[in-house]
Image (cartoon, rainbow, N blue to C red; front, side, top):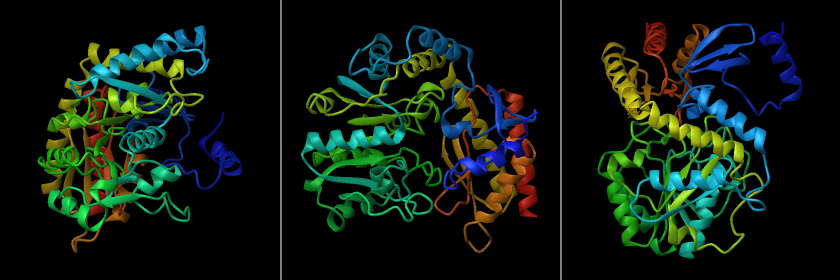
Length: 414
């Protein structure tokens, strides 16, 4: 039998140290919200592959869609020989994303690639170079997107020089945001404002309810495109299909990835027809973009959301998490803030002196792992535990996971 240790020893020889993992269990199989390692130990998954598995691991409809498409063909390159699954998926996404205007969709491979293409399109359309992201933002690891990412370690440290004309504005305070265009960048030089509806890696931070409507109105007034990065917050995670719907925002451009294809590599830029069409022929694309197997998986994902009422399930999970985390905030002094929106929730841990409790967050995550629960740490100070369980999680599994977390909080608090 292959053991976790044997695989870890081999990994240490062949995988670079910079490519780390949160756990030391090597997955043999996964189903729904349960992951099983090569030694047969099962874990409740509160990570979801970092928000990728909203419809659950190995959903039968996704597996069938992948098999069916793979038996037909796995690649032709959409730029050479187009095919129906990509066109049908684009049609459904254009209808599903916020906005009553006509839209078009571009498919690429990863979240970072979607953000890069959104920036390219915004710059091309506006003929302006400046891109404004936010403090605490996370948009990816490529040169451009790591520049847009706010957290230095581990994402930016040692990897400069960075891409030019990228600026970081204050998040959540509209007056500070507006003043940034006096001290930080000229509105006439700004192509786009790129925003996560709920900041993910930055610490599951949701802004006040009036923030994004004011930001979107400001952008419209000054000819700046408003780009919603829904890569982590989209696909039902917050109780709406896309988080910007909570504020009635209709972005000019939107990036979608992660749970769109249940683990298959696929991402998209969806936006206003006139903006998407402004780029010359051949100006966007890629060899693997709109991969047919990934597109088939994504079509199955959209069917699952409709047929299994996953948005309703997301709302219920969010209500459960909000109530439970609220109790913990009263019960455990270390739980200082309950963050996020809907089923995209996290707890921020702080010491009595107000300093971020990063070490306790690590201890809590390890306690959870040792007791059969996978969790993730995030935040610029590494003191936030975020939960991204599949929306198909069973009630008993959800409760068991929360019980483990509570046990861990009791251990790191007392």
